[in-house]
Picture 1 (cartoon, rainbow, N blue to C red):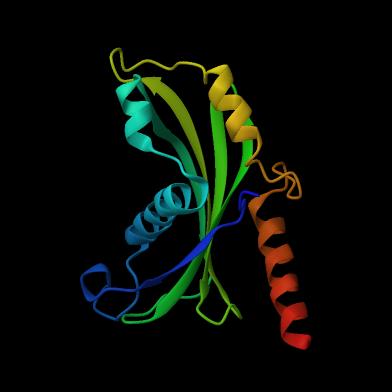
Picture 2: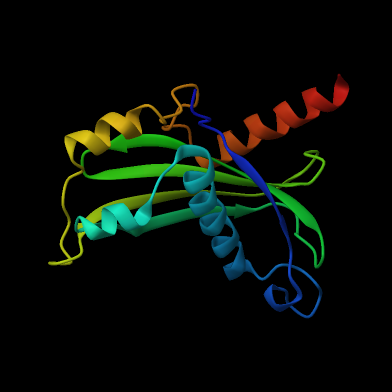
Length: 165
């Protein structure tokens, strides 16, 4: 069975931090995107090169991100990602950053990706094969229409409940 909620651990690097030792706001995007790429490759056998060779890539349509607690220099953080929605002409994934012990939510991001042809640079639709595969990864337990602030509240409640056990 495929893991639809893969996770990984990353170390916050000095070169990614501001003078206060906090992860720079723009670098959160990189940590989330890099984690999703690794999750796709390692947990879901996704090969970007295969799609690039077949004239398909994705561009970011938009990011919605909230910064809740600073990620600090040399800190180990856990990143978890999941596919919220797959449609013919876009997909949306969510990625969360937690402290390594999973007690605090540091950031959350939702990203909309749009498929494009590498030859033309124009929007295209996902193939039937891609849709069939991607639908197996779609996290139907999460409501993709829930706004980000409500989702943050859900995650914080889950974290607090786990700490009570």
